[in-house]
Image (cartoon, rainbow, N blue to C red; front, side, top):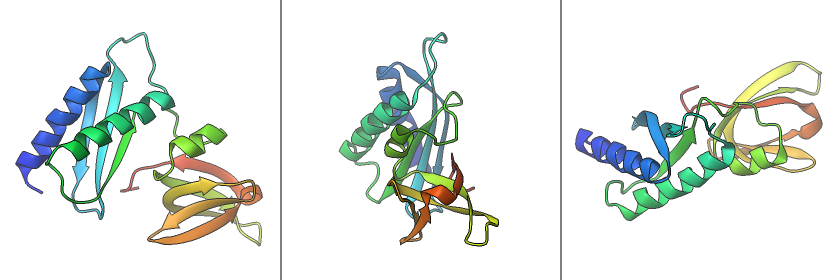
Length: 156
């Protein structure tokens, strides 16, 4: 991916965020990952407002549409929109729906009650299992064994 394409993505992202009332405070494209990762960190233009999970989700959809409508990228990508104001622990049912497809780190206890950690992309959480995509394979972790689920970045 050329530097010009990265610059065009940065400009497109900043314009779309501005149109929705946000400033982009950090922007990274990780082209060495497959699929490539676009990470956008935002804040409200109005400093009295905090960025919510719904803000990130809604802006993510808008940015995704803008990127797809442009001719900048012709390959698969993962788009992550976040803010310092959004906690990194997933606890509520809505968190697991909003952050489907995002990279996570799961701390859980195995069959011997020994604490373990694993990383992957969040697929879903059911009443019985947390489903994590690990390089195309689904790992199912019983919900009762999950200690915490934390949003992370693809690079760790």
